[in-house]
Image (cartoon, rainbow, N blue to C red; front, side):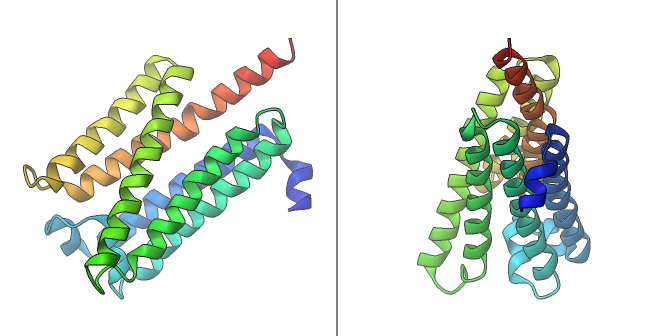
Length: 201
C-alpha cells in the first residue's frame, strides 16, 4: 500500500474506478450467461449468490468492486488530502457492497435474514442515489444528465418489477448500476480535477 501511495495520481484513481465498475458489471453479466433462468424468471442479481454455478463470479464481482473502490479512496487521500470525504464516500459504497454480498448467502435460511439482505440492498441503493444527485449537481453537463437518466431509468424498472407491474428486475438492476458506474468514472474524476485546480488558484 506504501508503493501505491507513492505512485498514486488522478489517473491511478480513475483507473481503479473503471476496474471496479467493469469487474462488477462484467462478472454479473457472466452470471446471467451461466444461469439465464434467473433473468427469465425475473430474479434479481442476488440469486446468483445462492447458486453453486454462479456463486464464485457473483462473489468476485462485489469483492473486486470493493477492493478497487478502496484503492481509489487510498489514491484520493494522496491526491486530494484536503478533501478526505471524497475517499470516505467511495469506501462507504464498498462497505455497503460487502454487506450486501455477505447477507446474500444466508438470506434463504429464514425471513429475518432475507429482510436484512433486502434492507441492506435498499441502503446501498439510497446511498448511491444520493451520491448520484451530488454528482449531478456538482458536475452538471449534458453527459452527467445522460448518465443520471440511465440510472433513474434502471432504478424505475427495478422498482416497477418489485411491484410486479413489469418483469425486468435483473435488467433494471443492471441498467441502474451501469448508470451509476458511468457517473462514478465519467463525472467524479472531473469534479475532483476541477476542485483541485480551483484550490491552487
